[in-house]
Length: 275
Image 1 (cartoon, rainbow, N blue to C red):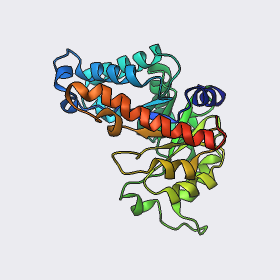
Image 2: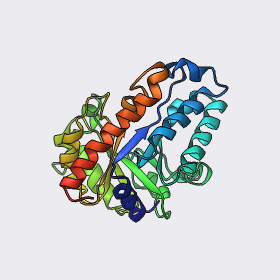
Image 3: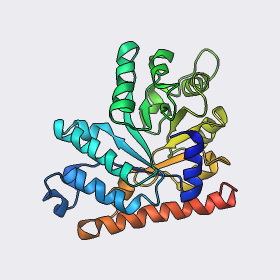
Image 4: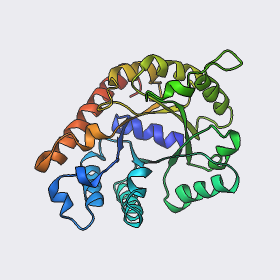
C-alpha cells in the first residue's frame, strides 16, 4: 500500500486505528476454543466486526511462532481473511534486525511470502539491516524509534557523542535512509512528551504508536502530540479491543471498543482538518 493509498484509507474510514492481533488461545472465549482452529476463528471474528473501523492490523509474530506449524498457518489464514475484507494495511510485528542475505531473506518472507505491507525492524545493526526492506513499491519498514517499556531507559535515552539521546540519533539517522513513503517509526504512547519529540525529529513520517488502552496510553494526548494533516499515525490497540469483553459478549464488546476509539479519532481529525 502506497502512502497516497494509506492517507486515502485514513480519510475514508475517518480512522487511525490499528488493531493488534496478539491472540493467545487460552484467552479466547470458550466457544472459539471448541473450533478446530481457535486462534484463526477468533481473529476472523474480530476482523469481521472491526474492518470498517480499522485502517490497519498488526500481527505480533511471537504469538504465532509459539504455536509452531499451526501458528504459521493461522498467520497466513488471518492475513488472507483481512485481505478479503478490502483495503487494510497489514503489519508483521516481527522486530527483525539482521544484515546481508539474512535481512534479504526476512524481507522476502514477509513481503513476498506473507504479502504484508510492513514489517517492524530493530535498527541497531545499522543501515544494512534496514536497506533490504526499502525501495520496494508499496512496502514499508517500521523502525523501532522510541519504546515505552521500562527497559527503554537502559539504552534509548543514553547521551551520545553529538549531545543527543540515542533514540534521537536513531530517528534522525534512519530518516535519512528511507523516505516518508516507505519508512515509519515505532513510538510508544505512554509518554506523549517523548512522542512529540519523535514527531519533531520525523515531521513527515508515519508513526506506529502502540500502548493506547491496556498499557495506559492516553488517546487524546497521542493525537495532540503526533497527528499531522495527513493523519501521520497508526494507533495500535491490542488487548483493549481483543479482550474488551468475555464469553458471548467478547466480539460485540470488541466492536464497541474499536468504535469508541475510531469515533474519538474522527472527532480530533475533523477538528484538525485531516478529514
